[in-house]
Length: 167
Image (cartoon, rainbow, N blue to C red):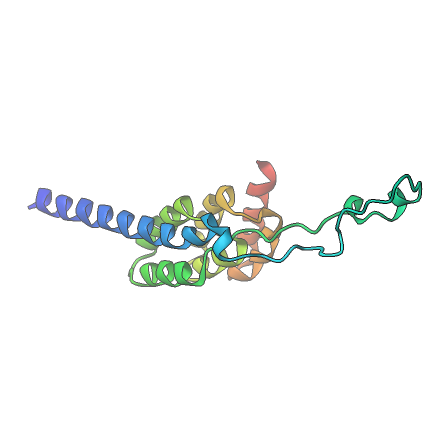
């Protein structure tokens, strides 16, 4: 009886991994084919100029100005919807944690995505465990302090920050 249950759990886990992997690759197609979604040049005025021997060109040349950082990759809305539905479909925080960690390992998630996932846990203990794990995979770690709103108690947020600063 136990072996049949174990086989069913292993099969369920394999199916879940396959589902999440497929979900992540569907959103990744847009990232791999940027020519299908052309992005405008961030500074159309920053065009190379040819001023034959003019010594003043270097002072006003826009190519040497600092360029804005490109946006960090996050999960697509479709990916997030599928991940959230999968997490919400679980009854217990232990299973939610297992799925959320698997998703974070496979995909690209920013701080806002992680906050949505963390809020699905019933208890701060599991939120803390998840966010400590997810830090290594987060695409915009500099924004991690905004996760304070995910916790019910300030002490759990402080534990998260201590763990991050210790790395």
